[in-house]
Length: 289
Image (tube, rainbow, N blue to C red; front, side, top):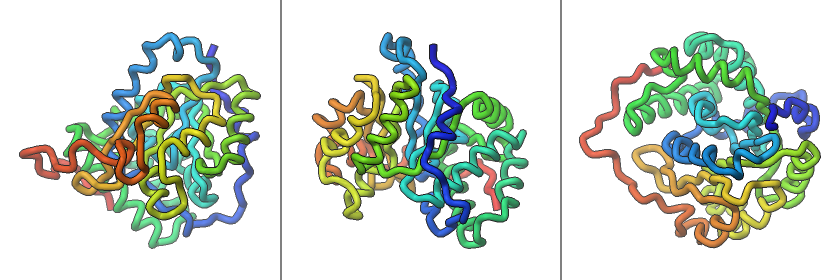
């Protein structure tokens, strides 16, 4: 039987007591991921998912968690980032999502944390506003953090309180880091049933921090205890409108290795559609700030 692995919070790499504000690169995800998370829900219909012990979803960075947690039935969510400051920020983000009862309370609490510099707070608000607009333009949904998204926010607020959500400071291109995470998960009889690699493969490849081919990512990630058909969500480097577009999902590490291709030009990095939906005009959304 699968359960929330709250004990992973004590087993995660320790975070520095000194808050590293300058390391918060993407306070809010800039990806078009909601449709991908919805598609990936098909995993819950498979015997592999039903039989998995202590199901875990691994997400990179913020991954629009406050909006997408409704599509993550896994009892444990691990938020992986290779920057200490981002992991510290994610801890505050999770606490705020659990404690604030509505979107405006969340926003007020977020802005009153006192940890973020004025520059980082301004960037965070800009990133959030991009997400609010994106949610209306591409999905027609009101984002959970929109002041008008009360019912949706409440559902996600309650879900966050029920799950184990752990920031984990690690580099997914490091075999050593993934072996540590994988060993910890195995020791807790966990299986990874969802992996979100948004904003990772093409971005790290172009910066020289990642691998040139998807198969190299799959090889390192094989250190994790995954299901064979685990959905792997990926996004493009090329933006659709102002946001990265979905390029996956891939189903299992073998699929990623065989079909993802080149990190910059392959299927893993190239969206099927780079344009805005015809006739759609950004609007009908409350801007925070």
